[in-house]
Image 1: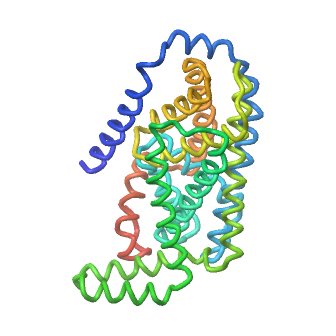
Image 2: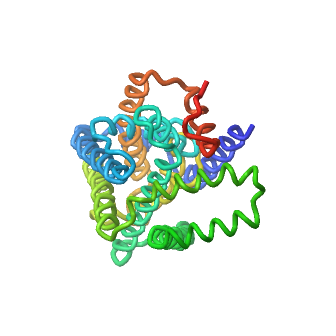
Amino acid sequence: MKRAAQLLIGILISVFFLYLILPGLHLPEVWRAMGQANYWWIVPGVAVYMVGLWARTWRWHFMLRHLKPVSMGRLFPVVCIGYFGNNVYPFRAGEVMRAYVLWQREEIPISSSLATVIIERVFDGLVMLLFVFLALPFAPIPAAFQGFVVVVTFLLFVVTALFIWVTVRPRRIAALYGWLADHLLPARIRERTDGLFERFMEGLGSLRSGRDLLLIFATSIVVWLMETVKYWFVMHAFAFSVSFLALMLINGIVNLATTLPSAPGYIGTFDTPAIETLTAYGIDTQLAASYTLTLHAALWVPVTLLGAYYFWREQLRWSDFNKAQKRAERTAQGEAAVLE
């Protein structure tokens, strides 16, 4: 029932985003523009995107090193499985799935690896905001998304400040947790949360030096620059042109929007912001829609197929998504528990 409710919420949000853009689209013209595109430009776009995927794998390898050294060759399939899960399941279930697969393969506690995943999302969000604010002097944000960007900016800075405080002052955080747990949590629940807190704090170990913070942030910039380069290559398949800064803005707004719950594959939350932003640059709405649909497919299909291959190679099943979520929920009861 809970997962069905989550799926329903995601579908409703996707429908809302599609409702915002569909009335302005004339689908025959969109298909006509797609039929005239030069799809060979997608090939170098996919190649550059894979470079970014390896950079993302290296970043996770670097963040996990204090827990256990895991080679990039072993991590890359896990990252692809995570993308597969995110693209076919709602609510970014792939993040929990890759933590589950990592626990199976490397015996790294799920709560610890999930902490590194949360750090990734925070740094990704900060880079998206950097892209948006770098482009602001040269590129207008559509009015419909200005308030959203302001709210996300505030939340991300709060979360970032909290993470930095947690990693710089772990003893104070432990003392605060201990006081809150002593006064607010029953003993039965305390037995579970203590282990979860300890393993989560262990997972934040990659942030305990300024050098590590800078290196993770720099790698995050490389990851998203590679994705923006893919936007640039796919743009050349169509009869329009905008600046690279404009594409950085589109990338930033789109990926901030896809943090919202949505139907699987980020339907609507990806497409509407991209089309609206391109339209703000004077690009014809039908042409903007044809580019966006092609870009969405070029981002979704290759990594999803690759993740599906690794998912099959690991002999995983669809039920493992549910197992992963259940395992994450009860991980504080002991990492040595065996799933049936």
